[in-house]
Amino acid sequence: MPKSAFALPDAPRFALVNATLPEVTVDGYVGPAAREGLVAADIVIADGRIEAIGPAGSAPTGIPATDLAGGMAWPCFADMHTHLDKGHIWDRKPNPTGDFVGALDAVRTDREAHWSAADVRARMEFSLKTAYAHGTSLIRTHLDSLPPQHRISFEVFSELRDDWKDRIDLQAVALFPLDMITDEPFFKDLTEVVAGHGGLLGGVTQMWPDLDERLDLLFRTASDNGLDIDLHVDETQDREVLTLKAIAEAKLRNRFEGSVTVGHCCSLARQDDDVAAATIDKVAEAGVSVVSLPMCNMYLQDRVAGRTPRYRGVTLLHELAAAGVATAISSDNTRDPFYAYGDLDPVEVFREGVRILHLDHPLDEAARVVTRSPADILGRADRGRIAVGLPADLVLFSARRWSEFLSRPQADRIVMRNGMGIDRSLPDYRDLDPIMKV
Image (cartoon, rainbow, N blue to C red; front, side):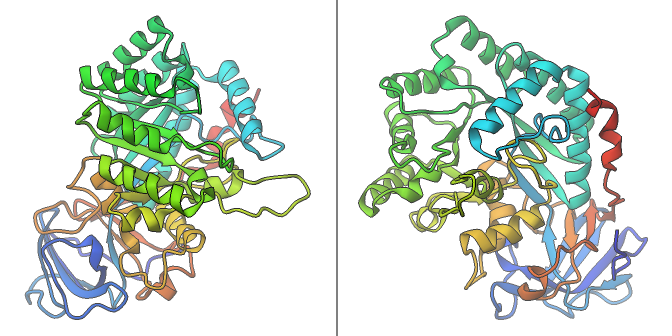
């Protein structure tokens, strides 16, 4: 791993001086005139927490200091839509076609053959080590919850949540086809498992004739059990598939007071302007949050052998944000049949998201999509931002400006947790070899 240009003081109280902060990630400090949303600042850290944020040159003299020479300081990242239970099975079960149907078949085969508690734990822990080294402090994962997998994976998740509680905060969502919601014994058992492990209800929506009835059952069950909802929605280029509006209407109809998040929403980008606008207005009215998964959906969507793809596979993120909808981007799958690549690195997700979704020109608020916005959606307003009183959980970069930040992978970054630099060594893929031998 490249050596960082900075060294942190070995002291309980010190300063990071001449830092450049993405202004959208900072609370309680308005610096000198921002350029593309970047402001200069000094940060004073005491006993692992941020003591003060002030203009460059304001840090008190007489305490140790690291001069960032204009380098950026970000809060640690929030990765709000992942699949830690699927991660890293590519070598064992690749997807030869690279498309969505091929991914479903490959994952089903691998899950039925191999997903014991030990197997799931090994791969999930590998992913957590990777995410931690890259600077992530908050992750929500969807867990495949077809029986009996829901009992296996949620138990493993709870164990890992406890093991990692001082490094990464974890949330889990039950992922299952909503056509199974009418299987009363299964859905009752699933709900008990989710509630028992402090999870969320999720699922995949489709254009069923009785979609509204299924959604009403989902919302009533979530309300009765005090659970939030996070759904996989319209992950297709088929413009005839548009369940997003029905979900927003169901939230309003059921007067659901919990949080509702929807991921993907790819087909929204294929709609006529009037249909898209009406859907977005309803999503905004209902207070539904939307997360786009640009890398995975560009990989899967519009893939036809021998033909160049025409569509990017992302939702109308700009239009949703303009309407007041809470929006973010995230990693999604990692080295599995749904996405053959990835490393749970939000810097990569952000860099690719800027390119794919045109989050640039201007870049003033772009940094929010992997920091404060996903943290807020996940109900963690103490994450994804830099503020006095919060833990000094920061990621330091030598890059000073957007052109520098977005042109390299920032492999020399420093990750700080509670004011101290961590070991950024990534786990070796060879560590997974024992469970790849089948």
